[in-house]
Length: 256
View 1 (cartoon, rainbow, N blue to C red):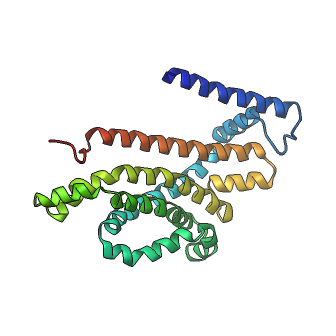
View 2 (tube, one colour):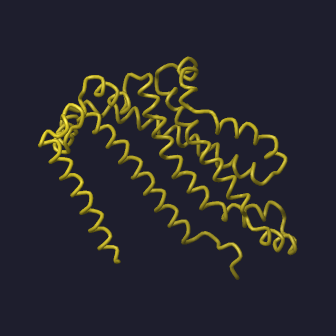
């Protein structure tokens, strides 16, 4: 099956789904109060953007996501490399990593709100906590799965530990890092929405909360669509960056 055929089938299935959805709502099989139609959702989205009321929500949620996500990457990737490479550091920090991984971030929301208030920074912390563990664990796993034979060969030629780390371990870990970044995207967006649902004065999660409380299901779906589209775009960007990196990164174990 060619790429064009796959795209045609995928697009066709989405269109059929939307048509069935529209028909179900128009036929009143489901009360529009509980399930809005695609056309009503599209109109609500157009009105929100035309009126300009949604731009502040986008700016707030975007700020929370970007800052929290970048902070998580800035902490998790270097720490994951270090913890995976230095055994003593791994034994020292692994209990804390396991605990943080096991604790539901939602359960920490009341404490986070008390410490940081209902502004942007409380949501940044929630995003950070949601994204940092997937990034950290995947980076650590990448280091741990480096083939021992590559390390032995490098050491037999007198390569220093630092040289081995940067020439073999880090390039071999990059696919794991990208996997962690992609997996953390959903966790980070979930943190934005949950944080804003819990306590906020602006943001896409706040928009969803207000629309849900007033039974404006079309606006609820607009918010969901924005979050979903953001996640798809971020993951696609990471996929492109990963493919670009694969073109020039050194191939571990290849002949020179």
